[in-house]
Length: 135
Image (cartoon, rainbow, N blue to C red; front, side, top):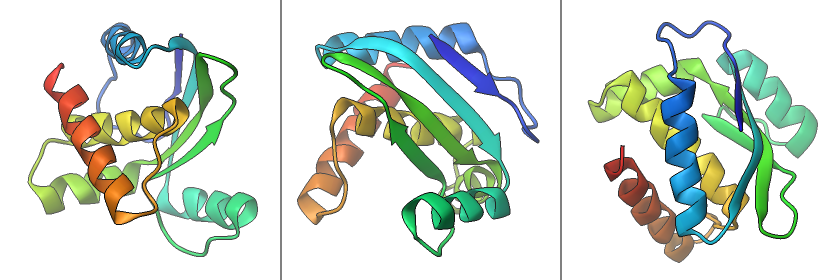
């Protein structure tokens, strides 16, 4: 089940489509999709959260809080709308595509994928691309 708190987002998110897509991702990763909240806000809002919860003093597009247990993935995805828009422009993709990339990135963290090393980052990017191709 997906819950989206829309703050300052210029396009409507199709929650049914998003939920079906993430259900498929979970199934392919041998997981069950539990509750995932997607909270959208500004760069400054996410910077403050990054600082408060992770002691990081830099802008980011997403922070993932993982509440997964056993095979059920669950968590909060805090997303900066401004980063999504800037990244979309920078990578010459639609805002919807970039939003979906950021969401799948967060959900892959809930599944257990990491991105701190180069090797892990490459694997994460391949998974992102694969799941984006299913939309």
